[in-house]
Amino acid sequence: MYATERQQLIEHLVAAEGRVVVVDLARRFGVTTETVRRDLDLLESAGAIRRVHGGAVARTRVSTAETSLAERTTRSSDAKTAIAGRALQAVPADFEGSVYLDAGTTTAAIAHLLAQRPGGARPLEVVTHSMTIAHLLAGAPGLSLTAIGGRVRGLTAAAVGVQTVDAIARLRPDIAFVGTNGLSAPFGVSTPDPDEAAVKRAVIAAARRTFVVADADKFDAELLVSFGSLDDIDVVVTDAGPHGDLADALAAADVEVWVA
Image 1 (cartoon, rainbow, N blue to C red):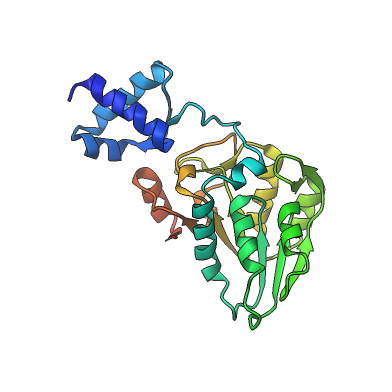
Image 2: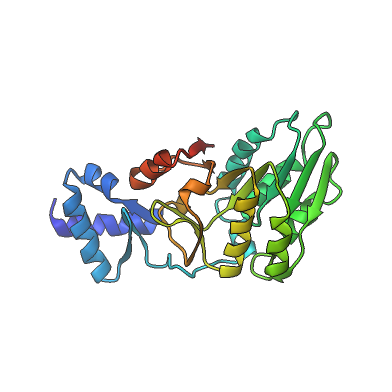
């Protein structure tokens, strides 16, 4: 295969899948990783892709890109539901304790399932700063709900600001389910907005055990603000296992990976 043909195929893969990994491409095309990196460098120079650690992503995947809650709700809905179901294996019917739900569409999928818990399940304390999730769970049987207030971002319907962070700092939930826009080996978990990042950082610091819920499209993405390293995470719940540098880094940080 000529180099130009290989580069065209790489460009198509990035467009179709959103991201590619150097090691996977080298294995796929039967070339060295150095050859793949040269291909990616040329494609980035041509404006076709954006290089990230260990691979490349689409040019549209920039550090400040953030879609609305309504747009994200309809995207990868089956994957979000599957991830939510897998994540809730950490909260069986006999679970006694408290759960924090971060704002986001995957955590909202968790909330939908929590609202359908069987009648014989033990009472569960749920805390959230998401107005959407608070609305979903208000009045749900077997759940005691605490909504954290603050200034509400219209884009995500999440409370943010000093008041929100201070309130979370006074909590100690047993489990926190946290969403993320990006998950990478060197940058950890990240999001485009600094205020959202501050709240997520507070949730991770408060929780006894942190579960990051994210579909595989978030792998190797690095948004503007990091709100935690891989060492801050206990479990990643996703719809496909990570590969390459990210998989190695998660293993080195002793992070469990649960695949839905």
